[in-house]
Length: 183
Image 1 (cartoon, rainbow, N blue to C red):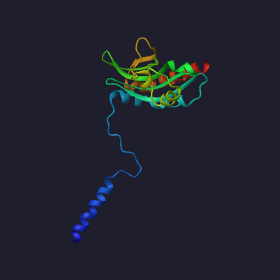
Image 2: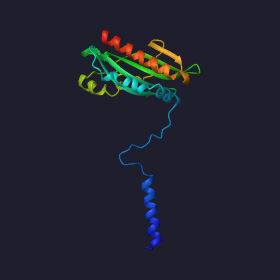
Image 3: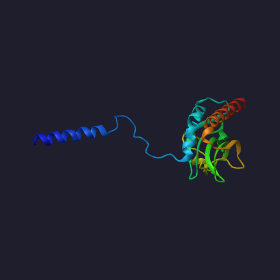
Image 4: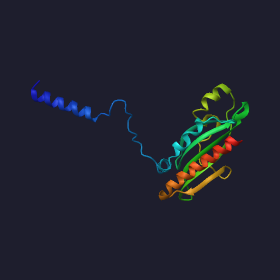
């Protein structure tokens, strides 16, 4: 092999090494965020919910948070149910959603109640599965609250008001936690 070929091969190897990501670092997320996901990021939604399931509650078991998405909406939810053998029958979703309604981009915070939909209840399997996902047993995609649900906040999202939206979310979650602790 000629000296010039060796030098070119050496340069090619160095260029290939430089293009690689550092060892142990995750691949950058190349998926572009939807406007809904971006809004939830701007109000720090996932982090606001992250500590709630880690707390110990007297009367409920709490799981999540989880990002949920549809074609025209995104949300971050936690889910909880009463302790005890029959607590599985009703599950509650507490979440924040960015969605369209009548042509406006809205931010909604609310609580939805879901009824158990699976044909059989096996407490052992349920206990393990419910920690990661509520959809299996409650046949629900986690969409934004409707008229029959408990709406805690709804407003048109305005970028310049993102900090006040973030503070509103934190206050609502603190109030929810106080209500749960008091019950």
